[in-house]
Image (cartoon, rainbow, N blue to C red; front, side, top):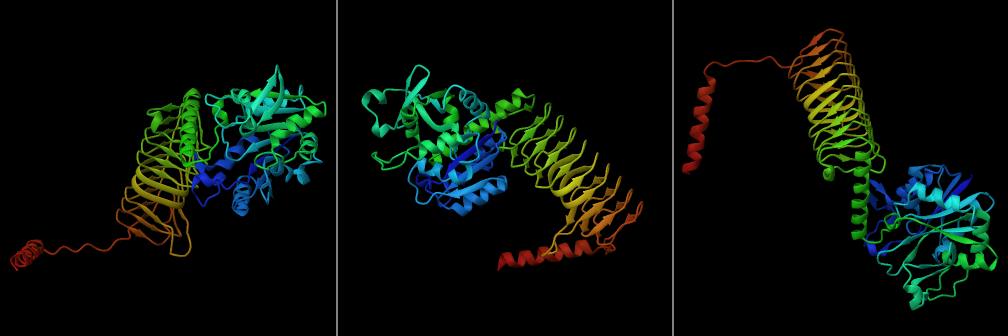
Length: 449
């Protein structure tokens, strides 16, 4: 079945009190818009169109960063939801197949719910997603008769009897692309807001002898974000669900309430995640790996049997092979650590390739930046890098090589060689006592003045 998505993302979101477009505010380390795009992409659509408006260039850039195949159109002026969907007509009207309207500020619609709407299309020409609201408030009401959706009434237009209905409109609508655009073309704006409501297509469909129906989802899926408080609520809802999913999938979370996931975090079964771990975007943790407490990870891959932390940071481009150990206060960035590498503590490894079973001593730094350009460090297999070694890139350390503690390595080290790059030590007998006495005298003199 061919399906296209239209994601409405034109609004300014004035209640956010922000210069940032509403759909670009983040939950789970990703813009709200990316959550809607993820739900759409899970159905392998033939086309996704994002309707932009406020700060269109920024929203377009974000959509294309998610997937270059996403197409964006601009709604200007903004005359309501039907008018917004109509902007996608030039791209989709001749596509055929199904069309589903989503919203860039409604991040939690599940793919299973969208599939249920597509299945319902076998019985109805237009399918609307509804939910039973605990507090219906200002939501539009769904007026039904049995399995048939008679009409959608906006709160401002509803009678007292209609306002007593608790079945509410999420705004998500599914129909064939041809039907949707045919119906939208006849929507008028004779309402209190003088806007073109997408919801009006239900009554127009009935006038054409077409059937409309409802698929009902849990209210939590329809949570929209219009304020900072709702943004925080959405973050909490996402994290709660992500933690539950991780536990259900066989991941150990020793303190679940302290672990924060990103939208695209992937963690394998039997991985162990300690307390106060934060996952940024693009992290994969394989089965059997352990992330100890107080670690921050983004853009990295941790293989089976590897251990990270506590208090470690993995930055984008960090690739840890099987049984790698990264210890406390270690930072890894854009580096590949092969099987069995050990980086125990107090170390920075950036722009580096480290061969299998190499040991990196405490205080080691790959000096990768010269103030203008980055340079790469290459360390071979089974090497031993002594504590407090400065590896001034570009530089290579051979297989089975060793660097002496406290060395500054500026030249390549051959296989199996020992490299010493430190100044000669000079001892001055008795000078320590004389120097300390002098310093104490100076301090005493200052204290009496």
